[in-house]
Image (cartoon, rainbow, N blue to C red; front, side):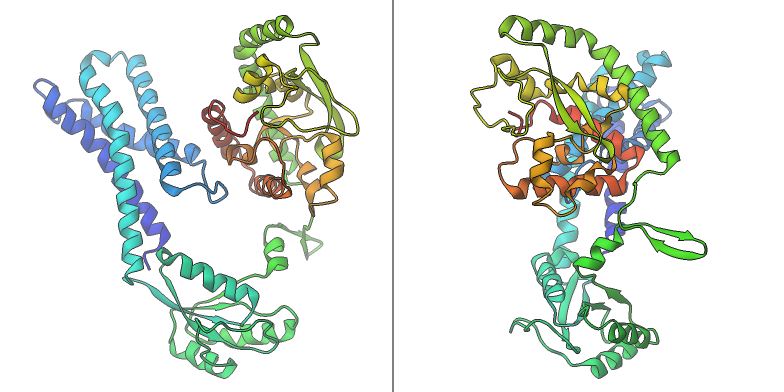
Length: 461
């Protein structure tokens, strides 16, 4: 199997090569008296370096997005390249070196490079996937335990041949809780498993053991320790949930944090500094726009400019969230109807504000007050919280972090009306993933993603 790390490395190195080659080739064709001592090669090298750094902040789509691979990859490439290019142009301008470069070369480089990057990346990934599909460098694996977990894993592998894994069959153990379909072979029991593991018959062995007998599982894992085959554990749902939690050591005793505050005091200070610095800067820049929006609301429909509604914040504390009024009503009671497509309550100005997310701008005041963050789980109306916490296990855990103006769920397509329970479940899943994975870099990536999605979000109405 071609390892994912190797695949990614090939992709990154090909991008660096294309960035450098494209400007060198353009310069050799269009720049008069070009030679390798000119600054184009240095600009290409600098672009390759910046491209890699910027890529860390624009890698905003993951498996949570649920969108086709190529569209996400193409958008990420374009965003990363445009950011890289304009940073370079700014550096060249500050260094007063713009007269040394042909504008034709730079403009040509601006437009041709992202096209080449997208084509090369898609082609390279398709080639790697094809090699795995036809069996080159594939790895044969065996699954121990005829369980729902093991069968789900096997089915997932069969649906994704590019993973490079091929299921040779299942070993049965005591307390197997599922029947083996005819599409999979039963290749023995515990004795045959241990013999195969000692002789290296399989490239990898995956344990999908029943959780009813921990003594048996511990004994089997101990026996496999004396073999030469890599052994991996497929966690059941309960174990999978625990793996996301952190460990502490208190009085020389390991402690697993089942439900815990996600941010230490130091990390909370960093996030608060982020909110104050970025929030203040954006608020100053957006004040003229907010003044125009206020005027448009006031002159287009009767009612206040701002709409305030009770929301739950950090650890369930209630606060008043600020938004520009977009409806003819200002609901804040025990029953609140969510906005729907073509909602008659939405004003003409309000429809535009909701579509572009401009109605959220007053929440920067909530950020400066300390009730919200720029990035975090979106705050829901108190009435909605009361309804959903009875339907979705762990729903209120999203209040372990301050709510945000934007969030991981919003940039992954789970914004807008939650007319089905599934949509709210996916939003909560994204919120919990964000809480577990928080970093300053993740916040910056979400802010960048929000800026590009604000004008094209089909779920906003």
